[in-house]
Length: 52
Image (cartoon, rainbow, N blue to C red; front, side, top):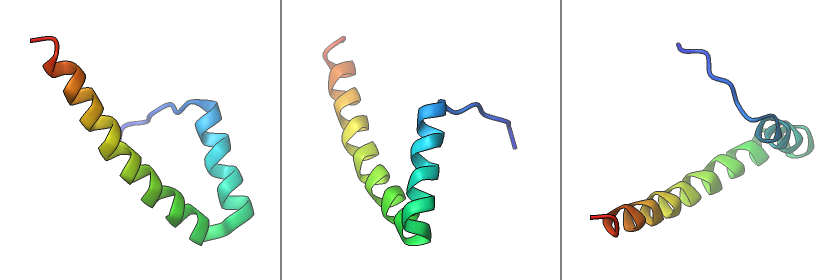
């Protein structure tokens, strides 16, 4: 596995969710992040299509 450096603010946010809400909170965070990722990727595709 390749070692990856994460933004400290992201690490802190994830740790805060884990500490406050536990496993369930992390599962919710992951679910919401995956939903947001779909939206962000779609927006990026739209922007990229405009460059053609």
